[in-house]
Figure 1 (cartoon, rainbow, N blue to C red):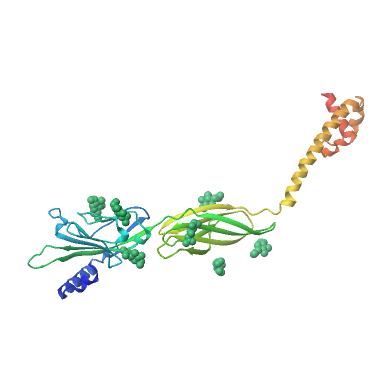
Figure 2 (figure 1 turned 30 degrees about the vertical axis):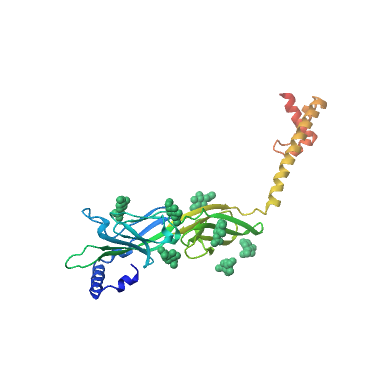
Length: 314
Ligand SMILES: *[C@@H]1O[C@H](CO)[C@@H](O)[C@H](O)[C@H]1NC(C)=O
Ligand SMILES: *[C@@H]1O[C@H](CO)[C@@H](O)[C@H](O)[C@H]1NC(C)=O
Ligand SMILES: *[C@@H]1O[C@H](CO)[C@@H](O)[C@H](O)[C@H]1NC(C)=O
Ligand SMILES: *[C@@H]1O[C@H](CO)[C@@H](O)[C@H](O)[C@H]1NC(C)=O
Ligand SMILES: *[C@@H]1O[C@H](CO)[C@@H](O)[C@H](O)[C@H]1NC(C)=O
Ligand SMILES: *[C@@H]1O[C@H](CO)[C@@H](O)[C@H](O)[C@H]1NC(C)=O
Ligand SMILES: *[C@@H]1O[C@H](CO)[C@@H](O)[C@H](O)[C@H]1NC(C)=O
C-alpha cells in the first residue's frame, strides 16, 4: 500500500476522495489533528478510524499502518501479517477488533505521522473488489525527560560592593528541543542558550549561561521546558563577602579585649582582696568613679578599690 496503490485508483476513486475532502471540510477536519503522546520506553496505542463490527472478523479486511506517509510499519491481510518495518519488529501489535496499533519500547525515532488504512475485501454489486474504508492520520509525539537542571557558578571578580559571576544551568538527555528560562529573585533574566544534539531526532543537551554583577544575595531559578513539561532547580547565589577584612577582625578584637578585661578583673579582685586593708574602703569610696565607666578602668586603683569595697561589704 505504497503510493503505487493510489496511482492504481480509477477516476471514480479520485472522485470518492473528493467527497472525503468535502466531508472533511464540512466537519472541520477534526480527525486530521489527532495526536498521541508517549515517553521513550513506554507503550502507546494509536487509534484507528475503523472498528471491525462484532459480527465480522479481521478475515474480511486488509489493514495498513503506515508512517511518514508511505512507510509500512505493520500490515495485515486477513489475520495474516504481510509486512513489518525492521525498526518495529517485536515492538508492534495490532488489536484485531478496533485496529489500534500498539507500539512498545517507544523511541524518539517513532515520532511522526501515522496512518491507519483499512480496506474491505468483501465485494458487493456496487463496490467490486477491495475498497477503502478510511485512512486517518494520527501524529505521535515522543518525549524524553530531561535531567534535573544543574546550576554551576564561577566567581570572576569580586569587591566589597559587588560580585561578578558566570552562572550555568544545564540539563541533558531530553526530547524535544527545550527552552531554558531563568529567574533572578522572581524576575525573568535572559540566558544565552546553547543546544547539543546529534540530529533533530536525537536527545538534546542544553546549557543556559548568565553573566551577573550582584550587589546582594540572590535566588536563581532555572527552568527547562519541553513539550509543556517543566523541570527546575533553584540556588541561592551568595554574594562573595570581600568586605571580610574590615568587618571580621573587629569581632576578633572584641573577643580578645573581653578576655583580657575578664582576666584583669579577676586578677585585680584577687589582688585587692589579698593586699588592700579594709579601712581603704572609706577612703576610696569618696573617689569612686561612675559605675558606667569603661571596664578597662578596673585596672586603676580607685576602681578596684571600689570593687573590693563591694566585695567586702557582701
Ligand atoms: C481498543 O481495544 C483495546 C482493548 O482491546 C483498548 O485498550 C483500547 O483502548 C481500544 N482503543 C480504542 C481506540 O477504542
Ligand atoms: C520516518 O522518517 C524519519 C526521518 O526521516 C526516519 O528516521 C524514520 O525511520 C522514518 N520512519 C519509518 C517507519 O520509516
Ligand atoms: C524478536 O523476537 C524473537 C522471538 O522472541 C527473537 O528471536 C528475535 O530475535 C527478535 N527480533 C528482534 C529484532 O528483536
Ligand atoms: C552567547 O554565547 C556564545 C558562545 O559562548 C557567544 O558567541 C555569543 O556572543 C553569546 N551571546 C550573547 C548574546 O551573549
Ligand atoms: C549530553 O550530555 C551527556 C551527559 O553529560 C553526554 O554523555 C552526551 O555525550 C552529551 N550529548 C551530546 C550530543 O553532546
Ligand atoms: C559591577 O558593579 C560594580 C558596582 O555596582 C561596578 O563597579 C562594576 O564596574 C560592575 N562590573 C561590571 C562588569 O559591570
Ligand atoms: C527561590 O525561588 C524559588 C521560586 O520562586 C522558590 O521556590 C525557592 O524556595 C526560593 N529559594 C530560596 C532559598 O529563597
